[in-house]
Image 1 (tube, rainbow, N blue to C red):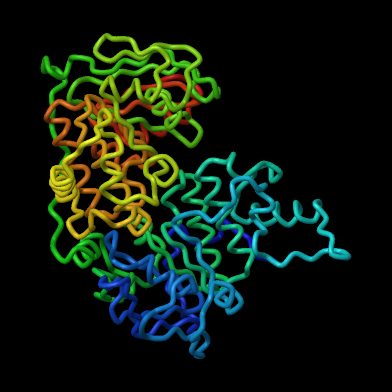
Image 2: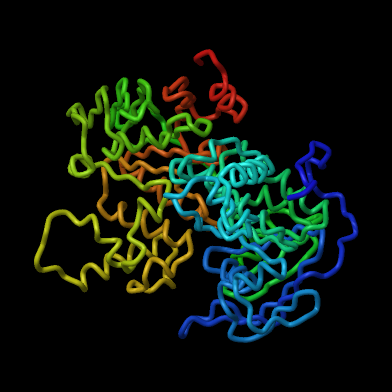
Length: 518
């Protein structure tokens, strides 16, 4: 990456309005069809050197499709892409990279079995002596690339051993090694913890200050308003508006994204002094997992309560939820459902007891991507039945999809054809239709747009009002503070504090990083 490096001199807001440089890429009247479905309809957007350009829209609005057309992953049916004013009629991923356009997609393209170093330099031209690549040279280049994105890991490890957040940074380092002039970031912070998000924001600001054009998508409006110089709104594959970001607020963006004013979201009010809410639905006592990442965690959730789990990356949030559900084997400890002990439960035991888990990684843990929406929704059907009512299943699926805002998604569409947010909604519907007694959710709105978040919050609150107990682990503190009745804070594999509704972000973060228990 040459002399580039992240410096602390970058403005915290990144919004000094400098003159942007030359036009690098211009997409003119781009349309893309998938059979009868129009994913993009006559979309024109341009990208200039030194500009940070945000593409904003709901799930399914066409953002990822547009980025895939720019990067050569898809070929538009109509329109043209011009790089340095020259039309590119036969764009491929390799050709786009050679012309300076590279993408970091929502779904990582790393190879889990290869080392971190090999993945960082995957697809790069690496100099060798007499046709032999020296491992020390590979390691040295990989370390320099990872230093640039602020990631310090053993580059000899298989990349599959890293956390999702770390893998995302490896992917970004790999793409930056191609030295792009237009960098496309599709939901780059969706898998990152708060510290990594701040590091990436500084990196994007630094790249733009050095003349790189950066385009990104995000469902986090605060990031958009902090980073972007220019904002383009897409809705249902149509360009709604492109505007300078200065002076824009969240209400302006959301109203154009959804085509209507979004109803204000107010926290629900419950009283945990009510008898129904005093009853314990799930109790976890001194759980220790075999992987050593949960080290004596204890908590309980009451009937009809939404309990949050906060903590920094590596605190053990995901591992605790997976242990409760039986994915992560226990070494010791007790898990009780309504005073009935589940001894080292398996997922089957957990489901029989009334537990459900929406995992953090939807593609690897939550769905079978090659199967249809309908097949995924009924994967957890109780018992083996040789005769099933397809009509009844379809009606039930359509009811849940309508509740989750998926009315335009065909039941027989493969999961792979859905956006990340749509996939997450299908996985949520799969479990909600079972009406579990305790629902565990790990990063439930990762990659979900602001309108869909509001819908999911309403669904979860309605379920809690009906008596379902819900545990939500999230790296987004505003989400936990908005949604949860209480918040448990984890640090180093243990629960170190419990906060009632009304706690502040500062109190939660202090407990998450403090060395003394709250």
